[in-house]
Amino acid sequence: MAVLVTGGTGFIGSHAVVELIEDGRDVVILDNLSNSKECVLDRIEKITGKRPAFRKVDLLDMEGVRGVFREFPEIDCVIHFAGLKAVGESVAKPMLYYHNNLTGTLNLCHAMEEAGVRRIVFSSSATVYGKPDSVPIREDFPLRTTNPYGETKLMIERILSDITVAYPEWSVSILRYFNPIGAHVSGLIGEDPKGIPNNLLPYITKVAGGKLPCLSVYGNDYNTHDGTGVRDYIHVVDLAKAHLCALDRAAKVKGIEYFNIGTGNGYSVLDIVAAYEKATGIKINYKIVDRRPGDIDECYADPAKAKELLGWEAQYGIERMCEDSARWQKLNPDGYGE
Ligand code: WQD
Image (cartoon, rainbow, N blue to C red; front, top):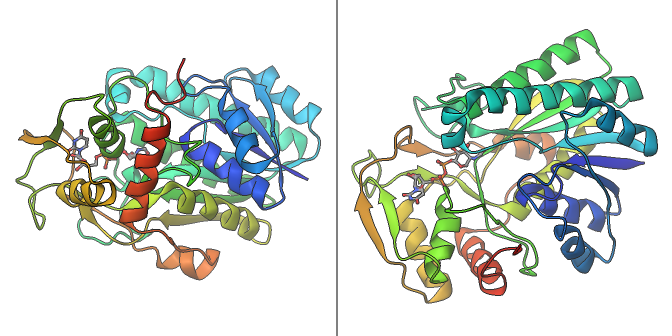
């Protein structure tokens, strides 16, 4: 049997593919390469000794999606990463985000039902909680998104929930990620954002690598221990492993389940800067600037449900996350290149 991984050449997707292959599972990657590079397949093969099957297909191409299920009848489950995910871009281009993320997912679900594939793990996000009333965040907290990107994640959660009501044979596992950072220990795969990074860790690694002059810390007047934003940073390999646990549980449980995938620890921006400097010996220049619109004070998970029902918990600490990020940046100063 095989796992179809949509978005499998992306940051989190590629790390999940490595874990799947190393766990002895066959993988088929479906990716349109809109935010990743085909050379990631070479890196996956270098790490695992196996090259996953790959089809360059856009989820908006219904016949293309159907074709993958026809070509690979051994597919019996799906991990769905593919989607646009830049918060700021989603505010500027809502129609693009709703069309791409929702229609693409609906096409995938249609093709799955036609092929009799009824087990899916979906890449959701803690962004569905918006600004929480308290922390740590449990899965039963209120859902209230603050941007079109987050809205697409919440809508897809509801689409999948309605599917499990109409089709009781479906098994759906919703993984709500907190802040994925780090890279595979080999330094062969990692985060390779286009242009100037939006997210904290890739920005810091670019400053450390001399690619950017200075980190702008977005506000130091938040209600946190040092005034800078607090988040639950989780190693991307820990996150990847959670998907295997979710696939296995979904093989035994019908219906829909939701899991917060975080460490349960909150770190501020300045905590991360200090951890990165300690892990690498590199000084990170930074300046305090105004808050970024839409940012929240604190966000970190209560990961108890994932531990209890998935048998999963994060293994790596912030130091290892910074060390692995730094190694990826050092070995790939220009990411995967052109
Ligand atoms: C983290 C902290 C910033 C950059 C986003 C998405 C979320 C998910 C993860 C997709 C905040 C501060 C950042 C910088 C800074 N993505 N910061 N200077 O905003 O928590 O979450 O990425 O699912 O949906 O919303 O992550 O890394 O952008 O910010 O000071 O140059 O770092 O203010 O406190 P965020 P982030």
